Amino acid sequence: MNTVKYNTLSANPETEACELKNHIGETIRLHGAVYKIRRMSGFAFVLIRMRDAIVQSVYSEKFASFPLNLLAEEACVRLTAQVVAEERSRTGYELRLMEAQVLSAPCEELPIVINQKKVNTSLENLLDYRPVTLRNEKERAIFRIQAAICTAFREFLNREHFTEIHSPKIAAIGAEGGANIFKLPYFEKEAYLAQSPQFYKQMMVGVFERVYEIAPVFRAEKHDTSRHLNEYTSVDFEMGYIESFEEIMATENRMLRYCIDFLREHCSDLLTLLGCTLPQIEEIPQIPFASAKEWIANSCKRKITDMLDFEPEEERLLCELVKKETGSELVFVTHYPSAKRPFYAMDNPQNPEETLSFDLLFRGLEITTGGQRIHSYKEQIEKLHARGMHEELFESYLMLHKYGVAPHGGLGLGLERFTAQLLGFENVRSATLFPRDIHRLIP
Ligand code: AMO
Image (cartoon, rainbow, N blue to C red):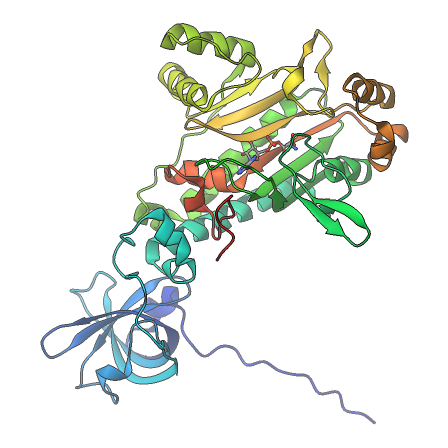
């Protein structure tokens, strides 16, 4: 008889930073990177960058079996240490280093100082040296918060019975129109990088009724601004059987409240480290686009130059006005002009010049676009024709309408923009791990 052997993986015998306080009086093993060595007279503080926190240990020849110069900043080490009760320490204990094994040592000094409170350099440098600058405590906190935002969105949407999908990023046609589309050779054909998962999330409404996706999308933005990336992470959801586009806004309102509560509960240390104040999210106010335009023009004594869209300055001013009037840092702007919205947007039956759509502005910047979609085949074909578009190109997308789909709508939220606004950054790149813009392809 064959004996089946199971590969029994032993539990990691090394201690996590958050568990250290439970081991007072014990000798433990841990691993991490040497973040900073602070030499004092007769001893040294050694800060270790662990998975979830930066932990301070004490080196003294009295306890250690190795010389201090074995440790270099950024060396990856496995350590044995004693956790000793210490009233004077903020943590209530002191970590005394006993043994060290260097797993990997840096070959050169770092090109930039990363172990100060903040990396003191320009955004350009910060991005050029991303593989190392991200190791800074504050820099990595940004992306831990971004990860928590995604966890919160996923948790919320899963609870609301949405199914997560993964749609293709190489496409035969663009979904959003406009010139900002990347072309790529695709064997004998020409293909495009997806500008959004729009068509696919709509198709999947016919399958799962409620779907979401958190994934990269691509926009060939030719100008260099603080709000545009050429690749960003889009948080998309789409839901069927809606009665009005207001349901989409209500769902986003609840999703954002859930996210803020989640961050308050799970990321308070990181938020304090970054000096971030979370917004109070109650019922987010709404204002129709045309009224918002007038309000800004009248209150701020500005001429309206573009009747179809906001200028960035107008978004900023509108947020200021809304905050003054309602206290809210977020505002839904509804009923955008039809001429500025893609061909899949549903027009308002009461006024076909405008759509049943919205944008969400947060602290002066658009972070979301959404709305109700056309579900009738006839209406969709008519709108395509009215725009001089060729229905043959959209054959597979139009199967959705041809073979019946419930009234539906959804939205797309820019993850980097949301993170940047939440953390008070002026440039969306600060909230992007490895940004892609017109000048930047590396790292
Ligand atoms: P839209 O094109 O408005 O709508 O994009 C949705 C959201 O994505 C973010 N965003 C960007 N972020 C960084 N860099 C860019 N170049 C960039 N472009 C857009 C913004 C924006 O609000 N399919 C629709 C959404 C929908 O209706 O479901 C769409 O993609 O935060």
